[in-house]
Image 1 (cartoon, rainbow, N blue to C red):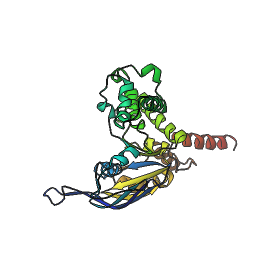
Image 2: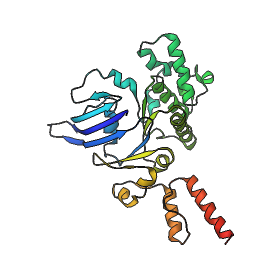
Image 3: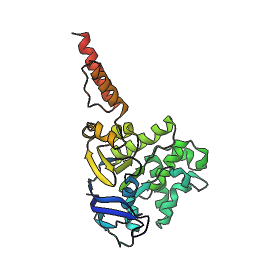
Amino acid sequence: MPVKMEQVTHVYMEGGPFESTALLDVNLEIQDGEFIGLIGHTGSGKSTLIQHLNGLLLPTQGTVIVNEMRIEKNSKDLKPLRQQVGLVFQYPEQQLFEETVGKDIAYGPKNLGLSGEDIDFRVKEAAELVGLPFEEVKDRSPFELSGGQRRRVAIAGVLAMHPTILILDEPTAGLDPRGRDEVLNGIRVLHEKNGYTIILVSHSMEDIARLVDRIVVMNKGRVVLTGSPREIFTHAEELESMGLGVPQITRLMKALRQKGMDVPVDIYTVEQAKEALIKVLGEKRHA
C-alpha cells in the first residue's frame, strides 16, 4: 500500500490569532497503481492534503505513511520521500527556466547526482512517457512550444526523478481544448501502460469521470465520500450542497429521463451516453 493517512489534522498558524484548521482527522488509503480523483470546492483542504504526501507540509497531528515511510509532526530528512512522490502544481510551466527542453527535464536527475549516461536515459525516457517527440524538441527552448507541450515538459521533469506516485494539481488549468486533450491523454497512458499511482486534483467533473478509478470528495477539511465515479455521482444533491456538481452528460441523461425517454441516469461519460442512446433508439426502431 503506497499511501495511508491516519487521523491527520493540519492547523495553519497554530496558536496564533489567525489559526485555521485545514485538515481534520483525515483517514485515507490509496492502493498501489490506483488512479484517484480528488475533488472539493475551494478551501476544502485538497491542496493541503496533497502537500502532506511529499512532505511539503507535516501533520499537526496524525501520521502519513508513503511506501512504508512514516511522516509525522517532527519528521526530518524528507528527501527520500520527495524522490518517491512527484508533485506537479498548477501552471508548472511557469517553473521552466533552462534554455532547452532537454536541460529542463534533466534538472532533477542532475540534482540526484546521477551519471551523464543515466541522466540522458531518464530525460529521453520521461519525454517519451508524456508523448513528446524528444529528438525534435530536445534542443528547442521550452518557451517556443505550445501550452500543452510546455505542460508536458514540466511533467516530464518530475517523471525523470522516477517517482512511484504522481500527484497532479489541476494539470489542464489555462490550456486550450487541444492542450487539455494532449495532457489528459498523456496522463491516461502513464497510468494504463506504466502503472503509476496517480492522484489527480481537478474541478472538471468530466475529466474526473473519464479518467479515474476512484473519487475522493473533500469538504471542510474532511474526506466525506469515496467510491467509484458511478457511486459518487449518484450523490448529486449532496455534491451540489458542497458546491460541486456532476458531469454535464449526467444532467442531460436525467433530463431525457424526465422527458419520458427510457435511458439510464447513472451515466457520467459521453461514451456511456452514446452507447445508451444508440441502444434505446435501436429498440424504438424495432418496436
